[in-house]
Image 1 (tube, rainbow, N blue to C red):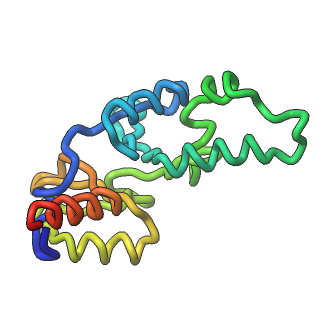
Image 2: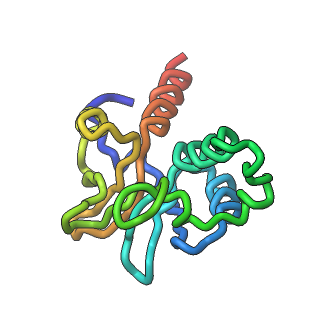
Length: 161
């Protein structure tokens, strides 16, 4: 992998989708099965945000370190939580990153032909570790994360040795 490689050569194209009403256990299962750390959250046909492994972990930490240990949920109750219960940002309530494709709160996105170097810059400036990848017609075609970039560098290094 080179810094001038295009995102499209390293992005994930098997996109995992969820809804705001889906149970957390189902989302975790879908993400694990797809070997991804991000799911796109839709309401009807509109993208309303993303949920990442970090968001889920934050929700679990919050429950484990609840102010009143007596009221900490057991693992079954956490599994039954809905995606909206751990979303963060407006209009959502807790931990998911709320955003849309365009509009006043856009998801952080890049195009397939963006270089890895520029993807890293976008992630660093935004403070986020995931980008939604669009084609030239503004259709969502994939995702890329900082972890995906690191893995691609690791695979290319292994191939050279």
